[in-house]
Length: 272
Image 1 (cartoon, rainbow, N blue to C red):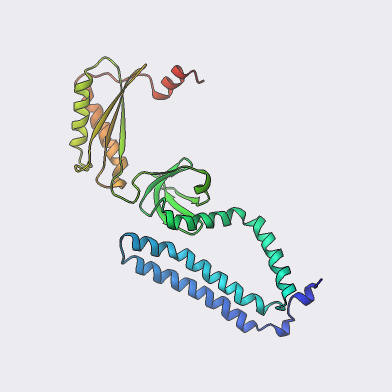
Image 2: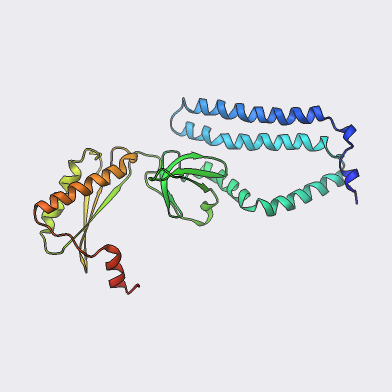
């Protein structure tokens, strides 16, 4: 078996200038390509911009792999036995150390083709809801409504449900809930809630407005469904509908249910 003195070249045999040039050149190439591609992508729109942004991490990974391939022969004796021993040891170590990381990279490649989310989409992954800001090779960065940045590995693609609220478009359905005492004129309440949505300054008039009525043991549940003009207005939209909707219902004397949804669920389902 070759020992370490046979595996690696003598220091006098290593061209440190070439190794340094490879490392510095790779770093400069990565930095330049990232800046250039992002500048070009900022001038494009639609699917071409998304694919160009997604190619940035792929190109970075390709440059790193090429740099490693060029550096290794300059550090070790390029015999077949040495290469087999080195690659075997490196593969075993990396396989255990970066198992989840590699899985996230593979999922990132899958993301490039399936595109389950894009920059600007509002998604929910593993209970976290927010707007997609950037997509890297390993993860997706989303910003929650509380302005918190959350990094979600693409690994979640394998075993988590991904909810995409607008799927790359400007149409995002918002639902505003009202819980009322059952003793009221349901048809009148439905008409009032419809008008509340129709007269909102945030509503997208080209999309449908629906009022869903559900009778519950504790009262009547109304779900007012409508679309804001811009997905980023969704929370202002729901707030506007809630405030104006409750005010309009109070004016006709409608009583709100005193039993919350959680309490009613526990009471009627037998949960503690």
